[in-house]
Image (cartoon, rainbow, N blue to C red; front, side):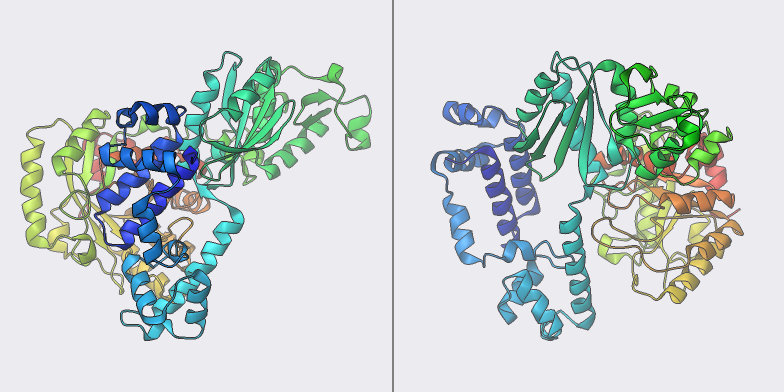
Length: 590
């Protein structure tokens, strides 16, 4: 009999092998949805025996039969048949960037490649380039992808969005326990880092043992790593490690602050604390004995409890050190402590509720999965005042990019939908930045649009000089353009392309345009240091969702987090403005 985690692994393996067989993508996705549903069940055995699996969202009749077969027998005939048909290492091959099912099948047929090790050897020997549909550049990209896979495996990083989703479910589970008074995420997840290595959770309770037991009993826990008086560590089915710290309620604020980090931020705070006659550590803020601060002696061991300073909130902690409160997203030792000391930290960092319009949205006219009307109604339901329809342009033929004729037909549909909805629909495009830096729509088209997002989608391997020239020319165009997903990175998959960002920002600052903060969880750019460089030049910011579905409109929160990490203030964000003011600000042709 298999447990739920083994069943979930089998379902994912079956979905992947079916993808290799060319199965319908929706059917493949159903196995992933089913695997997640199984992992979350607390009563799998009882549901199997009672025939009640189909009551679980994400599990239909056909899937329920397979789950029941796996649970009862430990095997699945279809899975074993597919395993026998494909080499054991084929699943790992499908994880290699630039390799899809068709390419994996071609490599296996031509070269007998069935493992990642065989693939790497074939690339280094120059044999992959001899296979039809491959070439020297593809071979090089595969080797680069293999290197990134090894780096990811070593770092065990996950996307911020995945960490937040796992964290939200876990917090709900822990907060349901009567012993929990406060529970919060800490660490790099709370600071909004793009990728996360593990989940740090801090809880306030008078009964640490009860919360530890609650964590261990969480349905998604695959194994318990350690369990002590105040600290418990577990590994989730996804491989993500969770570290729970439990303290009495009066210590919650200082422990939350400590485990939020970052380490460099805390190092500077400890120095300031000592200057003011305190010692700051995971045990809280304590007064130093007379003369200890001037002597400069390091505090060893746990501080004297009698010297503890009561701290009810993080804001109180910063105030005790003579500082403005520093928001979690800014705690990276990039000048925030110096600014807090001078009273110069921004007090109007952008917030989700400040944003009035959704920017950078795709529909079924190109590679989106929802119609113009479906996107409009979803944005309206979220309380948005306006929505930009920015489908792909002609060069992006792989994404169903619109030529001028189709673009005009889309305008007709936008006009029809506008009569049905209150949210204002703005006509736009995500125009490709060509190799020479031009946009792929002529000015006669651009001048009829409300908004232009200008993005690089091809030739990302250009050298630094060529890419810089390409972008500088585009940013210098007199048309107002929003520089979309600026450096082309895909987190945990593809690094940023090479260019001299300062030169590009200089060109944009001297022209007409804005930078996009892209909320797609795989992108999350511009990264904070470049956002600060942009706003320092007076370049405005647009928070975008880069949405290809109704669900993707939720990416706006990701964009807000990135912007806050880049010290972006409300007044610097164009889509905090009313629709007509926004439209005037971004109009391509003045």
